[in-house]
Image 1 (tube, rainbow, N blue to C red):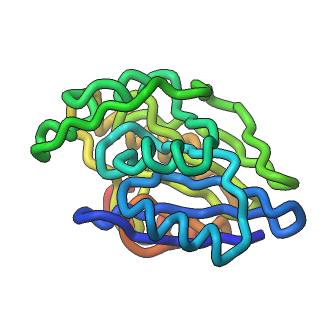
Image 2: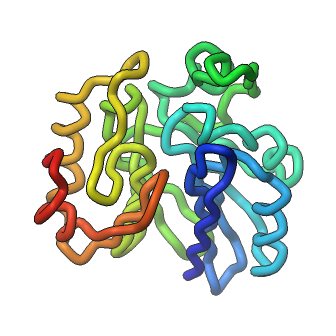
Image 3: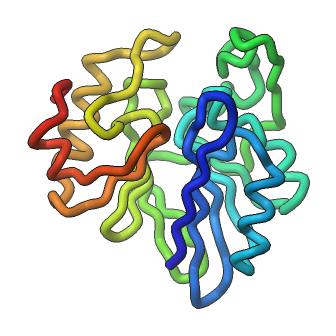
Length: 205
């Protein structure tokens, strides 16, 4: 298994490349910007991108979706409750940043409990609303990619449209804090952590 982390864009959103060592297939999680860097890393690792997965629909996590889709023809996946954010600059907040990001609708709308197969790897979709209505985390064995739901020593913002701090904390406690303590946490911004570390010392929990 290959896991590559690439902080991209002005807000340094963490884009992840997940690769299956046996088949060479890969998924790109949250291609927020800098598509050339993403494509370069895929090429360097000898990977073929077969999925573009979005943990939620905010601009800093979706900015390079159109370019990456054009370059790889991989299907774009997002939770059903964030689907309209791909096509609406007001909802994805790009208009707040002086841009107008609008892409084609997703190829696959995800739901809680769905699975995404990447070569011989299986990603489990965990719906964790609160930062956005359709925010998701992706569990891969002993790793979980948490988007803007859970950070090292912090949690996602809930003051954007569709956000709710009570819902977010409930999602984290019910869906993430029940994972084994040794589970590695790969967040949408900042350094990695573990579930155990966040249980012990995250001030929001």
